[in-house]
Structures are given as C-alpha cells and as structure tokens.
Length: 302
Image (cartoon, rainbow, N blue to C red; front, side, top):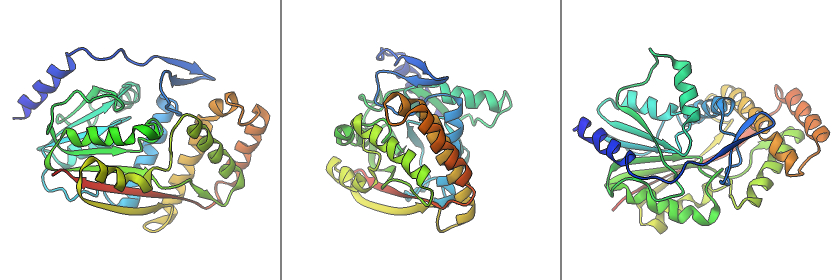
C-alpha cells in the first residue's frame, strides 16, 4: 500500500503544474516574487522557522493536538524545512507523510545539513505545490492535514477557499489542524514592539491578516468541518516558560532582522532608524519578556 501511495504521488507530480514563482535578491536575502509572502525564503529564514517549530512543540507538548490514533496518510501544507513532517514520519512509522511548499529551497538546505546519513525517514516525501491554488490531490487523499502559520502568505479574502481545499483532500472522519497567531507579540521592549508593529502594517498593506488565529474556528465551520475544537496557548508562558522565552527572543530577533530590508524599502523606517531600533531590541532581549498568543483549531470532515 505504501509503494502504491508514493507511485500515485509521483504520477501527480508529472502532471503539468503552474510555472514556479520567480525569486530575487533584496539586500542579500532571497525573496519570492509574484506572491504576498512577506518573509525571505533562504537558509537563515529556514533556521528561524526551525527555532519556531521547537518553540511551538515545547509549548504544546506535542507536534499535534488532533486526537490521532494511527494516521496513514499525512499532509503538511507549506512545510518549509520539513522538520515537522520528518518528526511525524519518525513518530508514525506506518504513515506516509507528504510535505508541500511553493519553494523547495529551505528543505534542500536543511537536507544538506543533515548529510547523506541524515535523519530523513523513508516514509517522508516532498512535493512542490502552491497552497493558494487547487491542490494536485484527489478528494479523500489524506486522513490528517496539518497547516501551520500560513498567514504570512494567504490573503485574508482567500482563507475560506484555502481551508475548503484542505478539507476537500481529507477523507471523511479525518482531521484538519490549523495553527495561527491570535494577535501580535507582546513585549516589554518598546523597540521590538515597534519593529513587529511595522511588520504587521506591511502585511496588512499586502492584504494579509497575521492574526488569523481567532478566526480559524469560523473558517472550519464555514468549510463544513464538524467537532471543531480550539486550544489557546501563550508562547513564552506556562510550560518551561524560561526556555520558551529564550527561543521566543531568538525567533523574534531573527524575524525583525530578516524583514529589515523590506521594512526599509516600504518606507516604514530609514536605514538609520531601523538599525537603531534593532540594536535596542538586541540589547534588551536578555531581560525582555515576550509573549505570543497562539490558536490551534482542529476540525473533522463529515
């Protein structure tokens, strides 16, 4: 059965697909073009996403919240470096785990670091696919679909369509799990707060809602999901809060560094003002308290 599943995936990969998005360089950062995505797509950003992955896993106490028993076909949407999918493949050894992303560069850089003897399980695969387009999978192709932090590239008006498409490829009785931030990060450091607020304004100007968490339940209901449950977690508080604070500070500082060129180009700051705020944020980081409310929403297909 496993071999048949991967053969079907390979057949779908061979079908005509839209031309890949082009990319360009901005102040040494690799940026996708023809997309509202506000973050770079390069190795440094991949490293930040891995920090963020470990932070969320630590806060949740697991890689998932859905009431899974033994899923056999798992889809990870916008998988980035593929860390979540590889860990799930190790955990559910009988499952086939497929990660999709519009750009494979972060995954390739991660696999290069793992080396030929790297920890890439045989039941994990990757496929290029755009979550803003109809997915190249048949209905009921998966029994668990996971999508984390899509708000940096999904326009607010497209959320109902995207959630509906994720539910389409899920089999009846399967679970769809969505993870998004509920609101902006709260920080005792005014410099970091100012930088993150500027990023929020940039995203809003591109039609993005980076605080989609509170709407996930409504999107799931609208798409037809049942048994919808939500869990609210505040990153930087609760379980192992001190360790979470260290990871959150590293994540937040890397984030505002990575988007600096975009903020300057958009006129949010002059180069001088941006660098001054960044220095203040770096100096305040060891003592600053940061918290980031996160929503995990799970729905089941009828």
